Length: 299
Length: 268
Image 1 (cartoon, one colour):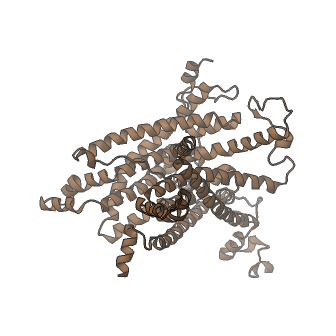
Image 2 (cartoon, each protein chain N blue to C red; image 1 turned 45 degrees about the horizontal axis):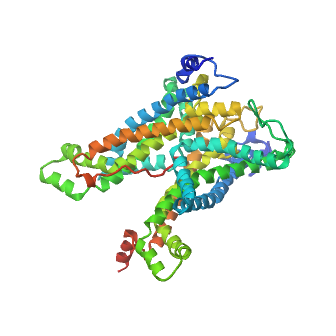
Image 3 (spheres, each protein chain N blue to C red; image 1 turned 90 degrees about the horizontal axis):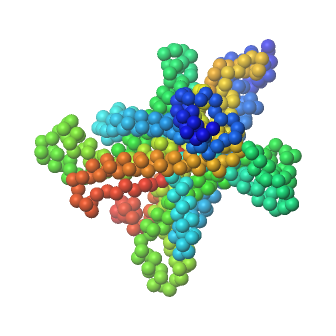
């Protein structure tokens, strides 16, 4: 009984009350998993944002290409992903990519396999082609699942980024590109030295909108089978009886999701502030109304 | 089993009519088309009702945001921030568990734990917030001359709003509002994946597409079918909104009419 009263001791939760009970409750091992999964969300954003930008850049360049089939591919990529609910794409790509990878490995590693791959309702590849290998440790399965999710996010958001960048490239004033040509730059040089540095100010409003959308898409990780914040909020919030845990409580899922709601609101607010600063920086000296306003304010 | 028989059995399965059991083996294309199409009933139900109700609230919130009264303005701003700043997915989960605890305290609230009511309310508030932001932007860009003309004619209060402000706001907002409608329909596919249960396997189009993909382990058939249905739905939305757009712009000379342009905006 005495030991429970020592501050910071959580060995006997039944004896704790009020604030201290909560401190102990919120630092259990499972809660640590919840906090780590916030890291998963941030990691997803940190990997997906540049990957989607790369996909988007590729898509936009393809859509602008002089080579017709590549142009059609770029435009089709943008149009199809935008026309269909994204969540359908998420659910589709995770299985389709997994099967695609296994199929490729199967073709390479087991060339003399002669049974069909689709047998009724089963997808059968040889044991060597399984991804990750059947005997792999748990963390490899989790990492593979996470990487599939990242690739799926990058493909879907790449299409949106491609659309934004495609528009931004066309918004760069023609006169600037013609000036560069007049200086004797080649097509490649014009793209690298003028078009790309100048397009960001036109792309940023679209890209910052996309960033907001990307933040709000992160809970969909849950649907892709990753143990993310939604998973843990449901898991931890459910009713707990005394014979299951030392910290029995009723159905608290509502409060856990309220916490997630607050987390996302704070995150979008923070992003808004940062993006506004970047926009002010990019507007400096540009021939846009934002740049004009800055010039007038300074004068 | 013939395809007409399948259609008779499953066309209204999503509402609970017809065959009780879903197909379990030997899945045919006809079954997949019929069931996923049956699920579209729910997507259309959520989309149309949320859009109609959301339109009214969005107009009110947009006016509130532009109001001179600081209390009204702050309330509207917070409403918009709350629903636009957080993921719809989390909003669904939170609302579902909120309705569950309300139901525990007062049985009166029990209908809200069903998708048909609870999810509809969330979608309604969500689309109202997004549309309010669009309408507010349009309200800000009403040409000064229009409102000055209204003043010169002696219009004020309700008449000024009804005859000048509101029609111009709608006209300016319509292209963006069309996008909002399209993405609202896309967002309806989240309902049965975010807490709200599909009782007796009565789900929406994505629910059935996911069912088939899980059972056959072949995503290459059900998801393209779903995509086809949604592209059709999107075309219908664009068509209907295009008609309204023409009506809103009918007084303008040809070259000044605003074309509908579709801009990207994905998940909320």
